[in-house]
Length: 434
Image 1 (cartoon, helix red, strand yellow):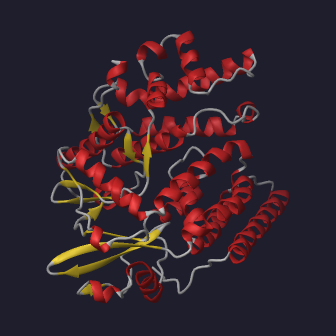
Image 2 (cartoon, rainbow, N blue to C red; image 1 turned 120 degrees about the vertical axis):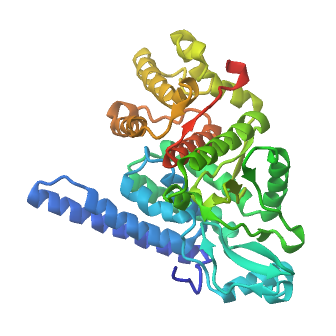
Image 3 (cartoon, rainbow, N blue to C red; image 1 turned 30 degrees about the horizontal axis):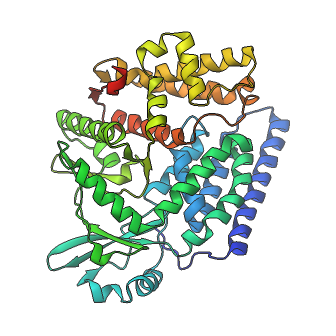
C-alpha cells in the first residue's frame, strides 16, 4: 500500500478535492453520452468503472466520512452498481495508510510520548488501513499488540465532509435526497461514535464480557493504559482474515463450524444483548487454529425494545401470512404511511412482503444452505428490480425507521460472509415470534 505523507484537514481543501471529483464525474458522463450517441451502445460499465476508481481514490485520500460512506455503501449490492461495490470494498481494510511521522504526532498529542517510549518495538508502516484509522503492530515484554491510530482531523471534519459529499453521491447513484438522507444521518451518528476510542473501548469490554461464552468465538484483550480518545490498543491476533480463509483449502467441516459460530455471535448480540457489532466485513474477523476472532467493535448499534419488537414481528409466520396483520406491522415501523393512496399501499405491501420473505428465509427453512447461489441471485434480482422501478422511485418519501439501516446492512453482510464459507446454518426466530 502506498503511504500518504499528509491528509487534507481544512474544510476548503477537502471541499476542493470533492468538487474536483464531481467535475470528473461530469466529464465521464459526457464521454459516455457522446459514445452512446455515436455507437448507440447504452452500456454504462466503462463509465462506472472509471468513475468508481476516481471516486474511491479521492475518498481514500480524505479518509473519514467520505471513506466510511463508501465502505457502508459497498455492503449493499442492491443500492449501487457492482463497479462501485468492488472498488469501495477496498475501504474495509486496504485504504492507503499515513506515514510514520503523522503517527508519531498523534502519539505525542494523545499519550505525550513517542511510540518507541511506550513499546519496545513498533512497526514504522501500518499493517492495515481503513476509513477511520490504521493499525500498527507493537511489542513489549513478549506481548504483541495491535495499535489502532485515528487519522488526524477525521472527527473535526465529519459533518462538513458529509454535507459536501451528499450531492456527489446523489448524482453518482441517481438517488434523491430523501432516499440518501437516512444513510447520511446514520453514517454521521455512527462515525461520531467511532471517532471516540474511549467509547469503543468501553463498549468492546462490555460486549466481550457478555459474549465470552459463545463456542469457538474469541476476542482480543484490551489495554486501557495504552489507549486514549484517538488511540486504541488491544492484543495482536494471529491468523488470516475471513475472506482469505474462505478462499483457503481449510476443511469444509471446519468452515461449517466457523460459519455457525459467526451466525450465533450475531444472533446472540442482536436478540439477547440488543447491542451488536454492526460492521460485518471480513477485515473485522480472523481465523486462528479453528476459532473465530472478532477484532473490532468500532461500529456498534443499540436496538430499542419497541423498534426491535416491531422490526422482527415482520418475520413472524403468522404476521407474514396475514395480509392485514402484515400491513399493520408495516405501519408500525413506518413503511406504510397515512398519506399513501390505496394503490400505493398495495404496491409497497407487495414489495415489502417479497423482501421480508427473502430475508427471513434462512430463519424459516431449517437448516438453510447458504452455498446455494440461486438464493443470492434472487436477492440480487430483487434489488435490481426495485432499484430500477420507476413507480417505487416516485414513492421515495422518506419512510421506515433509520435504526433499520444498520440492522439490514448487518444481516446482508452476514449472509454474504456465511455464503462465502459455503455453509449450512441452523437459525432461530426471536422467541417472541415462535
